Length: 160
Image 1 (cartoon, rainbow, N blue to C red):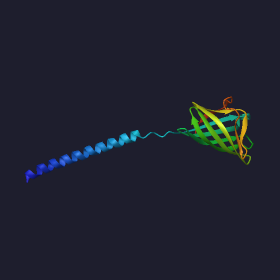
Image 2: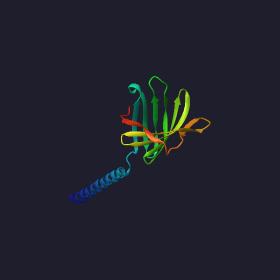
Image 3: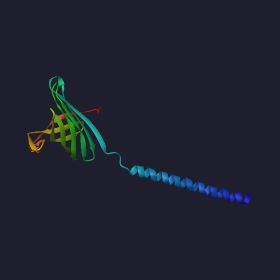
Image 4: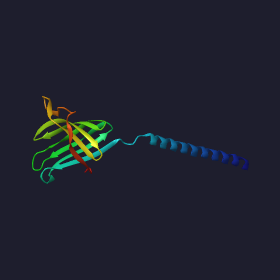
């Protein structure tokens, strides 16, 4: 009987060693696969600009950037007056973002194409003369993007 137990122990030992080796290989493969999955490329940023008497007029922007796609919200709340509230959607090309602001102002739905640039903790928006680009709905855009200036500056804040 002792003659049969020794080969049996050797077989069990080899089988166990093979299982451990396979488990370690599977574990390393899973870790390698996990490492090859890219981290999320989605970033969220919030910005504000206060102006006017006692800094009571507020413009706030929240941007969600997913590679070259940009979405978000924008609110313009002048003190004790009607403002605008809507969504931003568009694309990012290099440092610039070309976004359409779809908003409600004084009960009317409007759109405005805007150009933004993110630089560090600051969001800049180009400002210049506007033109109407749609006769069906009010849809405005910068008359000349190249001659418009980044003259609106919003500072980064903690998103709420």
